[in-house]
Image (cartoon, rainbow, N blue to C red; front, side):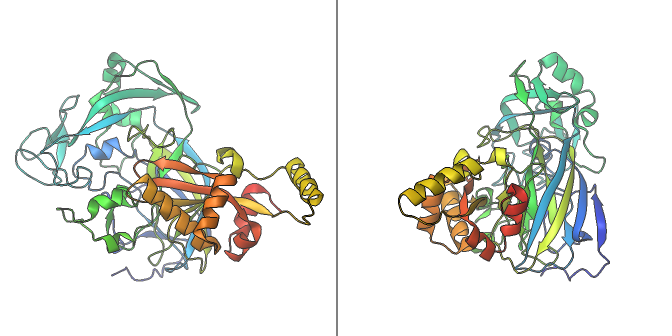
Length: 439
């Protein structure tokens, strides 16, 4: 059962510095509520690797405690304006992972297990550094279910523009005070991945471009946070641990775990409301990422985030809808310039066509067990949202947009120029006018 509707007075600003244990549970009390039009300010903890090597965390990530939004019911949507994302970590470590057989029950992100005493999700302690530093508090054995196949430690400049990977001696020095260098919030329970001291890449320079890997509303069924998506979520179907789901139950997800690099400061994200209060949560901040996150992980960091929420009554969504920054749009999906419109009108008139279509960009998120499944999911969501056929979406995404990969194995953006008339009928036109200054 969902929790009773919140009756507390809504706050203009809700500050968040507490975290879940990795499980998004619609039956648990939320913070807030925040008022419609109000602000959520959060201090986030690193996402993937820290929680992955902390067996007591059961979701693969460590996201913020959800915040209720006033006057929201299932069938509504919440528009989230990302006002600011600031990286606070001085350093982090990451890389391509390997799962270690015998150290988990079915799913290493959810059900880590001590191979010696068989304890599921055991509490741990840190002894020294390196891949065996995380040890079971019950028996003292190394317990983490992941290790680096190829990893690196990286430091960031103070103004948040670049990162540089460092050698083993520097990584060892950073590991002497990992909580400081990671800037991990005090209430976070994760062990810092900096204690692993990976250094397979040295002197590599990367441009910082921070975004949120997790941002959304809580699902209508209890889910591990990193599995609130159609790709990772499939790992739960028929799983041998307590968070197993059926295929039908997975439909209650909200796809808050997107790993889409366009979910950054200045964008507008619409998320579905599937429980009373919505439950806005966030985390898994990344300093940067290339499309696809092909290594499985990127540079997870701590940071501060400012969000502003707006309730959209009666706008039922199955999954997220994004209005990216113009520079993040595929070239074909960018709004037409005044010169392009003038040329198009002249061409149309030359051929006897009286009008050209008024359009604006939209990016509909799709998820599934594979990239193909995710694409089909996104196409169907876009067609339903705009009341057009899937074939029309296919054509529009081909000639005025693109299918962009957020994360392998199955998160995509179906991005294209949509007719303003359909956007207006969908109740979305004021978002595109705001995002792209379209009249």
